[in-house]
Length: 303
View 1 (cartoon, rainbow, N blue to C red):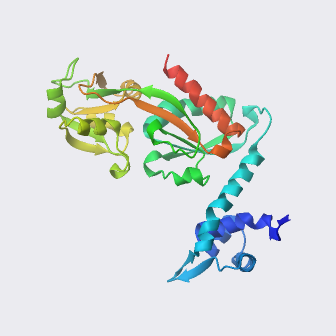
View 2: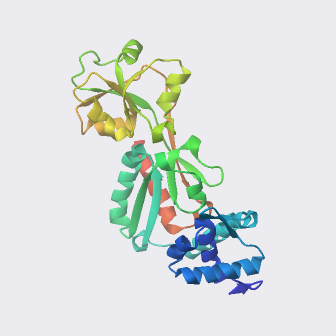
């Protein structure tokens, strides 16, 4: 189909060229030969009256005009993809699809594990690609590289719809054989003991407990920096250290490790978790099923 003499069937190829800035890489993306992609690039240059990509050293860079095309071309393709996935009422058991979800290991343990158990019975045709929040870039949702993000409500993008799922607080964790911490943890103990602190993405994602500690001017002696919350119990076992973890995750850890929960002696803002999806996927049946199931999981956690 052509509009204004432009072959719309070639838009996916144009998008690949603008995204990869490479004839060879674009050829891999669209499963064509390099000569075929080079010929298409020549036609695009002739159609738009612009070179689109020009040599810069050993690489190609987009011209200013090509830069201006990148977002609207990708946006158009995302709308078309979303349109092709719309259906009337669709039984979840009949959906065949892979969904990419971003979330921290807290999200993975508290929300995604129950989601996947439900999917195994109710939507067995769904497949999931789970990615860590520590490496996530918001542009991945804009570009359609990610389908769903489950994160702090304060961190959602204003470009796409979102819904709050759950609010959690924090607890402190110690080994069951801790010599000085019994039923309560004092502020003095909190400051004097060695801590296992979670640092996400080399510190790029600041945890709420760290924010609270800095704002209240509290000293914390960090002995171990862990890249995920799930590693915390192993670093507490057989030690006199302490850690600060979301309560719901801490309860799950307690059932698997010899650790105890005690009340935190400092005030930490609640963890408010939200789910976000691309604005074009609001009516996508697979995305809708995942969203509704996540809300079911959250409701069960509140009871």
